[in-house]
Image 1 (tube, rainbow, N blue to C red):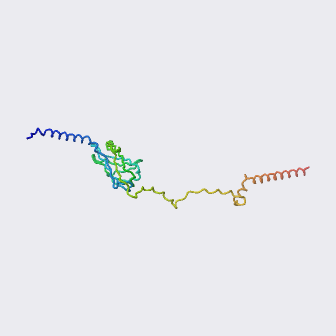
Image 2: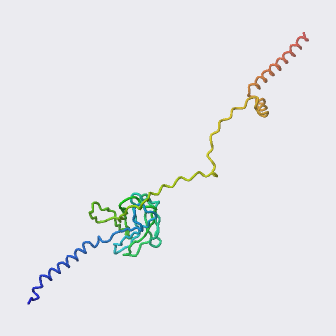
Image 3: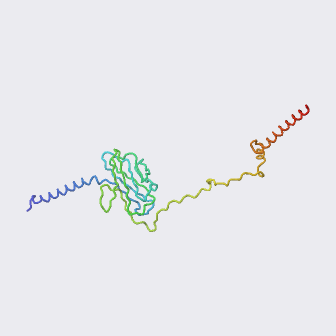
Length: 245
């Protein structure tokens, strides 16, 4: 008959296993908090897709106040619209993505929201690098992208895409709007009109030209008149002198 001493090695082994599991849980505990993304239609080139994000809270002293997301290549900020978010949180486009934030969430509350994307790019996977900011200023950076199957400490939310549906094509860029016929057109250069000739000049223009003392004709007339006056005066004086003698 086996005594309790016979079971002692098994008990020790069991305690060791439990202890290892506890230690392992403590070791991976902080890394369990992360950010995730899922899609309503996870296919390449899918249109009007809803992307749902969850950023797990990992602070025991403050709540999340803002999420800063860098969009993957193939999705531009203007192709994103906010669908659902924590109360009073606002989405603001940035040069490489968007920020979403507002009043601090309750401590320990995950930040959950969803956006609508006009079209997913033709890719195998999409990484949405995310920065979580807390009310106390702490920032968690989920920005690492796994490569070659290796694990990373702070993985970015990663969305794996299925092949595009048959016939799916990238959405063409919006064509330029046609010109508005009611809008005034730009003035076009008009050929300069030749100066009017003497035969085509208006009567008013001719009168103004003749009355201008600075014109050539006016000067000639004035000189001739002066000579006539001077000559007439000289003739009168010469006549008077002749009579006196």
